[in-house]
Length: 159
Image: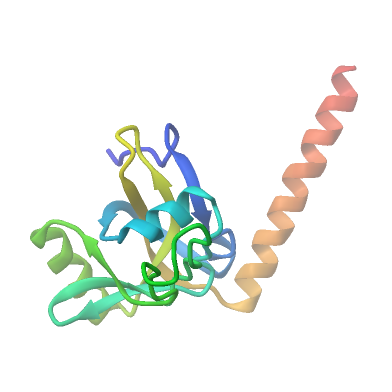
């Protein structure tokens, strides 16, 4: 049974577009290596992971193209690079399984959210994603609209 998502933690950044653009087959949690000013900036809630993905570099798993802005209260000498690749911390067996899935099945690893767990550690919720076609997106939108209108009808019926 899969672990539930980041219920207890405070969400620092969220990729809402990922569930619209991709079929999410599986989710998993990974740690992320950050420097001090990146953590401060994440706690301020200014990060964006909308165009980011996870990929392999030098035999490791990295979060690429995630934007964490500079922390304004730090001096100019202690700043970090805003879009640098950040190393993701996963078990070796899990990483090998993810890399195999990417190479074989044509899936991608998309970050769904960055959050802080109960211990205050920054975590990334990753999703194994397959791309949706335009027709799939339209069907998902129709289903969502139907669920909304059905709930509205049920509320009016019970009143």
